[in-house]
Length: 181
Image: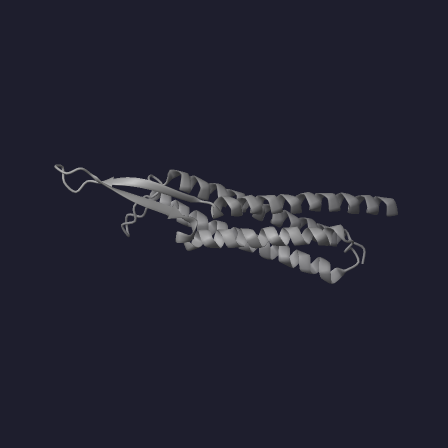
């Protein structure tokens, strides 16, 4: 009976470590993708049919949109927390109920942050892709295609990170149920 509990605890720790490393990698890559996202495009503007078009250089950067700044910030926070929480995992915290509860609460906070920032970035991405005729916002993904693809990739990576942290919460909750008092 005691050996079975030790084996279950060891397996749970391995799974938790895999999830934490996955959360770290997903959030790290999402932060890099959105943080380095920039695209410059030259657009010709024709004023008259008799004149040559004027070329305008336009640049899209992640910090022009607050939703992308929020996405970057939350991924950096989640990445940092995931790295720090790996140290708690390496240390035996099975007897420290307060620390276990704190990690579960912080994992839940990471889920909320990552889902909310991904939702905000996705909303901006939908407007950039489709435009909004009611307020006369034109599509920008036709002009900044690579920029939009990188925003979408970062959003998907961030959502995957949120799912990983959600699975960590589920794993910890199940672990609390099977844990002896």
